[in-house]
Length: 429
Ligand code: BES
Ligand code: ZN
Image 1 (cartoon, protein in one colour):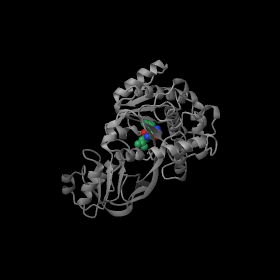
Image 2 (cartoon, helix red, strand yellow):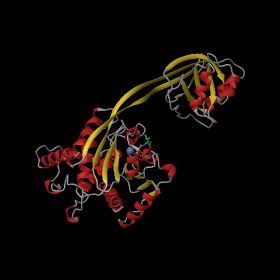
Image 3 (cartoon, helix red, strand yellow):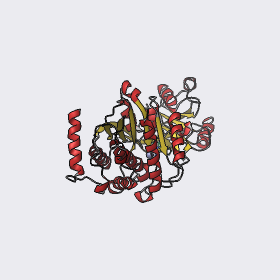
Image 4 (cartoon, helix red, strand yellow):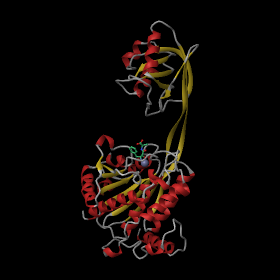
């Protein structure tokens, strides 16, 4: 390990000397050449670099402007990961990609038609198998075991109402009773989007309450034959996290990170090149400061596919390591809009709210039912203390307009300073 670090140091110095300058181009005067790669230990305050918003903006422009849209599994996502690994190595971290694969369900739309009658608007129940089936429609209540037992479903398409049990259970029960397809109708006005949560046994869709009750009514007097088609595809996606480590002396671990992937619809400058770039800047400052705790900078892939990368990372942590982590800071969407919300572990939220006041900031607390939707959730699940930074007011959220020019440097700086204050407070623990 000591030898590897030395090699990293040599590489870092060569790179900083301009021997092989990756980018973004940085003013030489701001590069803390002497401090990078230093073994942990007290550093005079004067040599600790200040939070540099220009560097953060340059990284955002590179990730979201040069590389652009970077959904999981894309060449752009790989390029972004390799860039981040290179930058973290320059800063003296032991950095590498952590590859993983996952299964992605691609919904290509579903159709339901009464044979000889009208089409009914249907949504695929996520994880339904693709396929076309045709059969008599049969009402089967809520799809509970007693409901499917009371209906003759063999070779038929089951019509069941939403409620009481999960969609997965309804579809399983109906298929076990011989149904070749399942239609779930809503128990409130309109249609909905549901998921089975695991590959289902037969094609399954949802329809609106209005259509469902009309069909159920008709079935009392008529025989209805229906045709149900689910078009969907399952793909294996290969993607990666970026994992960087810098040893400490305290025995404790602090994790900083955020997701670097974007949705397929836009370049994700705010969501989440902003959090990625701030993480990198914090990594730079902390490496130069002789931070007492082991630092792990984790930039997650496939967040937008359902927090996949962070789940994968957390899965690889052993119990002993999990117990040593005193905080995980998740920065996600932090460069647009005035309001700042903090969520996660109460104790860390309290600490951050208190420190924010010293900086003239008034963050809001995320209520626990709002606190999902990003990578810290996977850490909280393993009882790892986590703090989530998030700004709720981005009009370009998940659109092609989430570009670097819409990211506000002042908002980036506020979050950078607050995160830095939290990290400084944690250093004294
Ligand atoms: N950056 C957002 C975070 C977020 C959280 C936005 C809560 C809005 C509300 C994140 O990338 C995101 O879009 N998350 C998804 C959920 C995720 C599991 C796919 C979301 O919240 O829809
Ligand atoms: Zn995000």
